[in-house]
Image (cartoon, rainbow, N blue to C red; front, side, top):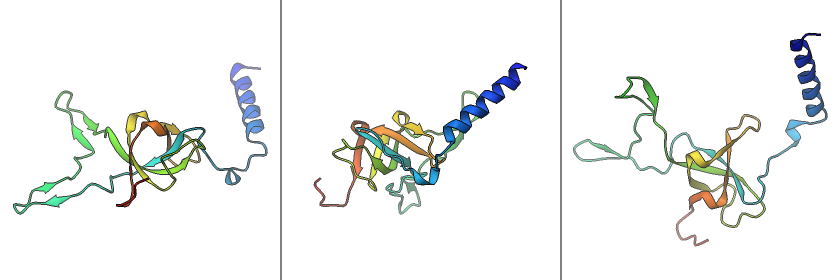
Length: 138
């Protein structure tokens, strides 16, 4: 038996045993401890865009792609702080609830490969702030 055949046989057996009996539609995902499961917005829904009397637009996000002055290549403009929706919280979370919007430092969040949903996990202590209705003190 060749190595490629052996590797294919092993990976097929391992995968079939791991997935045997698991019905993905019957499981859900809950973070552990103070973990918070989030999904980033494509665009910040709380950014105010204003037009001055002279026609200048203030608050609009810069282009997501730009041409680098150093290399001349087209590069992505990465946000440092991003807005996200809280999907689920761990049992020890005290300040964040599912459904709330939060601001987080984007590069701290770890991707969670669950049903290709685009979820990320972050510790509650790494959430910068929550967005709540006016007058809410908690």
